[in-house]
Length: 120
Image (cartoon, rainbow, N blue to C red; front, side, top):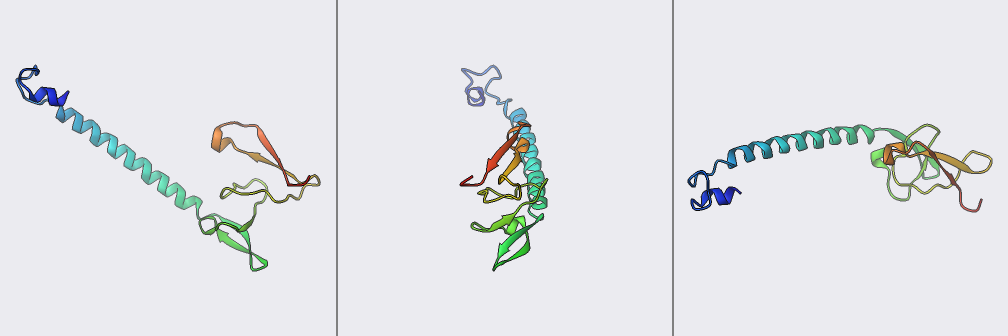
């Protein structure tokens, strides 16, 4: 529409593009809002990456920040803590070898998902 405002034959403003000022304002406000959301997400990620988890390294458990967990690390996740990354469930302290996972922060569902170890 802004290009048509420049052409006097199509324009109702005699070739004066009056649409660009409001458009620039809307784009500026949208960019500021997106930058604030990105900054808030960055702060939340930094905070979340600082949580400590027990990771099996060199045959012993070490306290490692979740941001320093690598592919192939064996992580001990205790009850009522968040899972720090995509993980493969290897075992549980329950007699039947199962665990209950609350995925409400991922998909909004409040039902618990039951996972069992391989071979049970």
